[in-house]
Length: 95
Image 1 (cartoon, rainbow, N blue to C red):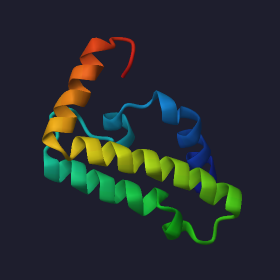
Image 2: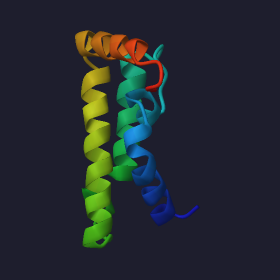
Image 3: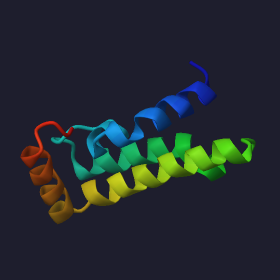
Image 4: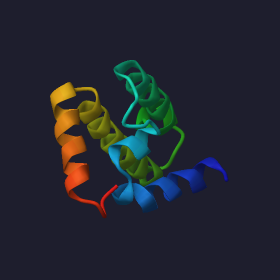
């Protein structure tokens, strides 16, 4: 799968992924593991890291990156993460 295919694959599944799945961590991951995962995610999906892309691809990257940034902010804050975990338990059909 090339980079462009990977971008569109992520975009197609973006709304179905939990914060954990998006950053490829588990609920047992430490703060440092979440931070490391976000930095790896950002290296791939940050629009500025992909300056050679056209406007449509950069818009897709921006959408993916913003969702990842939101996930990082939730998972890196202990209270927000606890609330998020509780919301996942209340919605069994939601990841």
